[in-house]
Image (cartoon, rainbow, N blue to C red; front, side, top):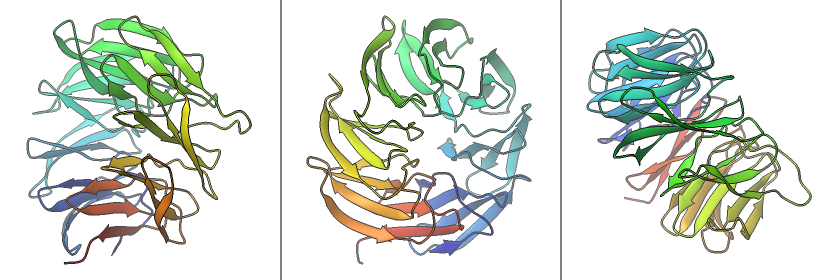
Length: 322
């Protein structure tokens, strides 16, 4: 375990034997994956809810005062900072030398990953919490983003040209999960949607017949399964083709953390502080840990470890014995 100075509400990143995690104390921490030794910490100057993205030796994330940071992954030193007009909860996507993210100033941004220069930005009608997903459209990379204005957009990465726009009828805080020409995500109108990105259009909608609660958790997508947590205190496993229920697992609190698929297991957590591993095929619980403090940030899985932080600022690492 590692104790930060304030709560952790974002997902950690695992890379090159290190764990990188942001905290509400305004620090980005770099820890050794094996025993959690602090290697360095970077002071952002404001609370961090954006999960770090790693690429080309850099770490990218936003803070609650609207600054977007690029930090050297080895030394923990600042490379550049870009200022937006509101808090950044969205995590970043990397494509074609650009870093893409949303801001609560109602814009989707693309910056030069190398120096932070603005390449383009497009206005939306609401906050953009989710991480853009990168697809190929017309032979070039495109970003798929859904936001709190109730629209899904497909935007060309090169120049910000809007390639498609679909009205969803509800605002979205989740990041889209992509398979082929389909995107999957939950909405605040208590539904999980499958969207055809080629048309575009809504292919199916899933809604629990009794419990009507929003989805803030992003979906985990694997072969033959879509898994998403809900504020209905459930984890739902659905068929990607139809939205039919495969299984439902009931927890004792809402699930805002995004589940992770790891082989034949599903790793998920809730706001009661329960971290649990489920059998992917049946939804049967195979392992549980009760932290005593809420999980809002999503679990990170890599190198045989599960890394997750609590709102009390305690970061846990779980894994097999040596």
